[in-house]
Image 1 (cartoon, each protein chain N blue to C red):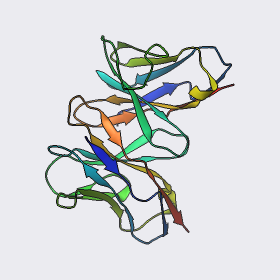
Image 2 (cartoon, rainbow over the protein chains, first blue to last red):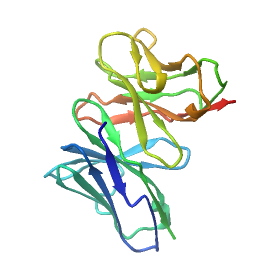
Image 3 (spheres, one colour):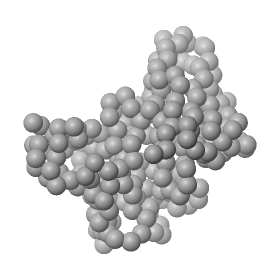
Image 4 (cartoon, each protein chain N blue to C red):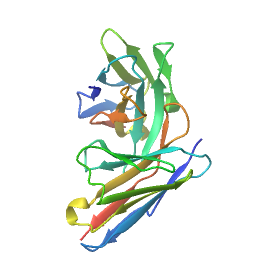
Length: 114
Length: 114
């Protein structure tokens, strides 16, 4: 089946620093990738839709200057949390659309901001 | 607006017994419905989807779901639960207003006791 990886799986950083999370589709090309945020014991909240070669589409309430998304190739999208603060601590999950309506999810990245 | 409801925060079943995890939806137009499972600190795994065709959809790991248009439901079922089925289950619907945005339910935690 289609495989999506995320790196790192876990990151701890100091408040005010920036953190980059990578999402890769390993065995297929994904024109569309999605970034989600999941709080403890809650559902996934879509942050943005990332299309290769174009600007990401952010959901209402998501700060585009804080959560920078780059989809430079058909197999890689990156999410950069800029000037991270403790309230940004969360589980970030990406997904990639292969074809049709099925999304394949990465294993997630747990971000802890001290 | 598209929405998904999972009325149960938690479902408890004994191993070997049948299980049902409930989901109702609200969409305009034809629904594209999904079930995903999430294990601790992991991304989501696709279980099954309904796009069109037979109302009973069979998926991974012995799971199936029944689409009921009149009741706007898409309950997840398995004839005989395993302890290893214990996880968090998400029902989801594709947003038909454009793009491939997916809206997730709040999730239902399934506990299967030995």
